[in-house]
Length: 330
Image 1: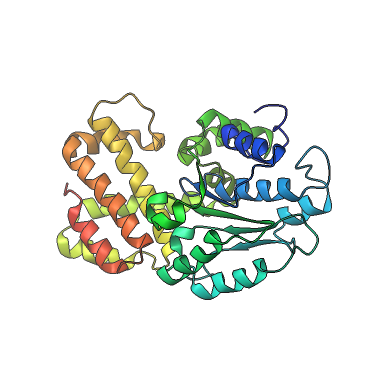
Image 2: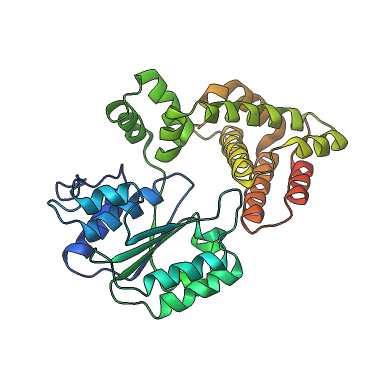
């Protein structure tokens, strides 16, 4: 990261930080940005940092010390609004968008810009997505919208076309490792493990460092996958019924399965790319030999489709039952 952007409170993604910093320096900001990338890769962190840069009153921008920067970091600034799917749900609703539009119609209370961060906008229902189009088509002055999503393909093309896209990729594992050791005080061995398991998703690594239950969830998810692969059809349906029903946890479980099947496919094709689940190398090798590249690829694609279906609010139980039947038997 250049000296001009090194103070941004963002780990990695230097190109995106530089892009936003240059736009701000030259007064060429777009009224809407779409930040895409895997879950917990740093999209919301970058959005908050940009909101702070837009309204910072100190030096360098963002200074991290002024009233605007400190309030935005706590999601407490009156002119910066963050909306997401309501707790316990998995859908961002039209009432939330309409309430936001009323807020954005007002002049900023104390900042230069009113900023709205719409997290995981791929979770917006069709009515909410269509409602946001009016704001995107007729933006009010001094308003900046920052949408995040796992993929632009999950949004309406009319929304995507009205935003400046910034796609964030997983960080190098060494970057994650250094951040955990230097900024969060993790022990080197612990940081190495979390960096590998994160797959470059810095947000997941930080959460796992503070919350051991994430590693416990991974252990349980991989144990469930192992059981499923050795079960009959009836037993697979029973296992699906026992999986957590809240979609956030379910998405995390499927994400763990997705990474595991990716590792199996790498092993089955003889790739030298590093695997994410390095502590399960023996299990991965055995499954790769048993399933072969075709079944491994089919299982990975089936997992990807199921995650996509759940994002689009498909019937959860039906989607999981279909996935269970598509996985190979051992």
